[in-house]
Image (cartoon, rainbow, N blue to C red; front, side, top):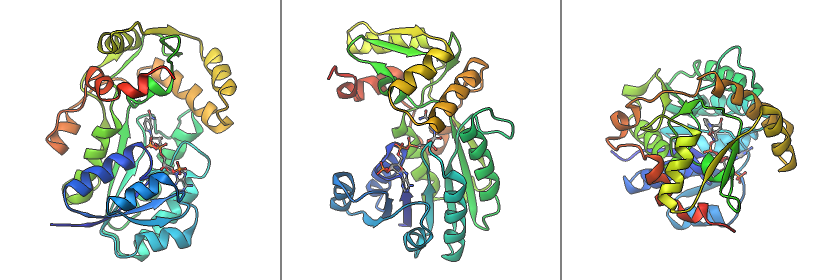
Length: 289
Ligand SMILES: NC(=O)c1ccc[n+]([C@@H]2O[C@H](COP(=O)([O-])OP(=O)(O)OC[C@H]3O[C@@H](n4cnc5c(N)ncnc54)[C@H](OP(=O)(O)O)[C@@H]3O)[C@@H](O)[C@H]2O)c1
């Protein structure tokens, strides 16, 4: 049955993936978009009902949640997650929204070194008070990291991950998980899903997979966490994000991001993308600019 679904972060990676799947499946989709721009115009052209507003603006979130059956809540790594959580929680409850899917992360825990990861854990605990169904998603690192952090001209991936491992998961696969839960929240109520890609690899193996798929050399260059922090500062990342990324690098080395499971396939009926398949589908993102 067609549901009325709100997707926040709809111009972003996981929200965009969720919208695409929900539209294919014939649901009525509303997007809360941060900015009125080309990306929101494309969503409107695809038939998405657009509400422009900030996740911190209670009036905007109230308008966005009116008449909605289920909503996807995602906030970027930026200050404001707990304010945005309280705003969504109250607006959704006021408007009798029946289900929320919450984007958290695998490093979310009470004593996380990353401020953002600890706030994700607190956000989960706040959302546990929602009277409807709540599902928390705790992905490992996204496959999108591979092009976001790559030095494409040098064919290098400079990261402080030593020889620890994870199974990169594509936002596209997470979009399918989010859409499946929003469309039928009952079986997922009260669940916390760690999300992984299909194959756990260290970054040397990941770089080899990228290299094989692109047919050009691509190398992992292990760096220290201090070098990583300095690289991020040079690239203009804000202090909140740098604090987060430096601390999850410690978590990564300690195995917090490791593992794999069959949740994507079980929830969606679709196998998640391998690194090779992800790179093949996103060749343009790996092109030297
Ligand atoms: N990247 C990873 O490896 C990883 C791993 C695990 C978990 N996560 C979690 O994934 C989440 C990010 O998801 P994503 O990658 O799908 O996001 P994303 O691609 O960064 O997109 C963020 C979206 O939120 C919108 N937005 C930002 N600030 C907003 C505000 N104040 N009000 C309304 N909308 C706002 C953005 O719109 P504009 O672009 O117009 O601002 C954009 O559409 C984070 O919570 C992070 O902890 C990430």
